[in-house]
Length: 181
Image 1: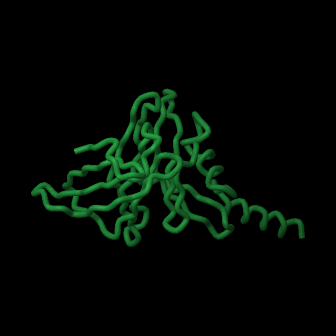
Image 2 (image 1 turned 90 degrees about the vertical axis):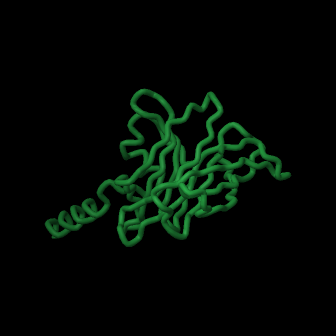
Image 3 (image 1 turned 60 degrees about the horizontal axis):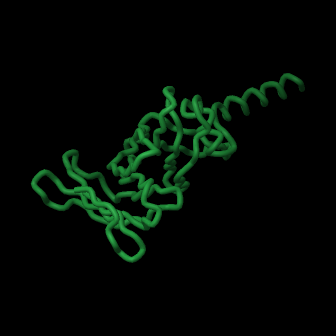
């Protein structure tokens, strides 16, 4: 009986692995928790995307995009194979936008536009446009900035590898606070 119990405990521990009961715990147990207590800025359970603020080994801030899934024990597993990290200086004006792909599973790739608007407190949304090298519009949209100052837009399909992106940071009245062309 003890042997069966020990085997069951071993199996449960193996299935749990590096997982955690919370996404915050999974991030904290990963390489991203080595130098700081990461702060989740955005989480989307439908597609398994998380964006968080943490520090690197030099003590510099970075905003990271990762993916995650819940395992069979309803625990969070952080998947770091195609992570994207952007260094940010939170003492200065930092605005960025990036087109990104999560390719953990070739059949289920996720395409997204995401970024951060950290020094415009009245900013409400980002209006962006993606163009190919010939100047043709590939995609455009407006996306709301959340209360943690980030925005994420899940794209319906992959964009071409060559593109340019422009964006406007807009307040509630539609005034442009910042533009990047």
